[in-house]
Amino acid sequence: MSKHLSRLVVAASLLWSPVVLAESPPSSPAPSSVLGSGWGAEHVIVMVKEIESVRNMFASLGFTATPPGTVSKVLLHSLVRFENGTYLELTQFLDDPKKFKKEATTGHQLFLQRYAAAVLRREGGKHVGISVKPASDTSSFLRSRGFEVTDPIGDSNAWEQEHSPTPEWWTVDFTRPSGITEWLSFLEYSHHDEMLKMQRENAAKGEKKVIEDHFNTAVGIRQIWIAVRDLEAQAKLLEKVGFTRAEGVEKTHLAAKGLRFESGRASLVLLAPTKAPEGLLGAWMKKNGEGVYGVRIEVQDIRRALVLIRERFPGKQVVLGGHGADGGRGFVVSGEFAGGMQLELWMKN
Image (cartoon, rainbow, N blue to C red; front, side, top):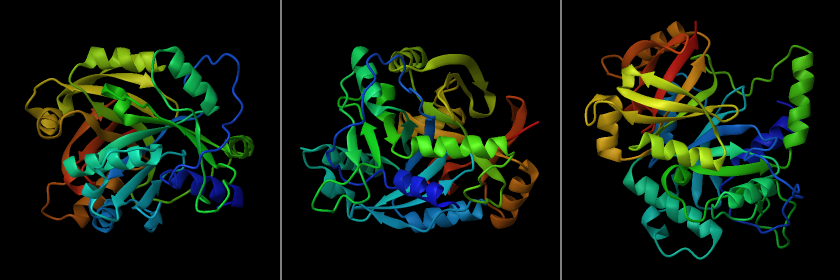
């Protein structure tokens, strides 16, 4: 991994450090989109109670995860990173999450309060991180559409220094989230332009940077599934946020219907059950309610991924059935074996 790429991954992986107020990046006069020149949806936070056991399960599924590291003196996390720039972030509280239920008075306390409440309810997907540039335009754009959001808040892995360091990223969050906005957060990375230049140079040379090799041949998150009860109401809210409705989807293997939205590196897919409270999605929502339900991860060899799982989980119902979908074929891994979040491993035909 190059020095520049390493710096970017470190900056991205330390998203959960306490807030360091800093001057936000310059704002464009007339923001016209929520993403700007950002990469869009790129990672999902998976809240777990015991990170090492979940990390071991991901390894058994064929994924390579980074060693756990301490963040903010409060959290432990491990990354499952893919060559297309997307990643899953497994996150655990180091202390009893009940201690963070007190009233929040700062942005960082509000973050801890929300995530503590999430992990106390259930393990699984909690949050979608969306890359934007510049963050100041994103904040202005969302306010122009009637949302209450924070100004860009600069943060850095050097937050413990006496003087505020130069931010490595900026975040914009909804201050009064409801519905779909409860599960979205926007980030601008300071190394964005540097990384984009590197990617273009590599593409021109016919090269690609592989961050991690996965035994199951996984290459990237392609869809992020969010379970909702009122599909049309949440779709209109997501359009108001600034995402474009692409197409309707039918996921018969989940007993679900939905709408796919263009959102950069990974599509956002809103899903509603068609057989509630039965079917995979209906049963999950009966127990867990709305929220981040799962992800589609593209693999290069679906047979290899399936054989590996059957070999490593003999006699266990890890796979919830195979199916063909969206010009490809795949299977769903039960959330019981993936930190509470459904994983669809999928390969193009």
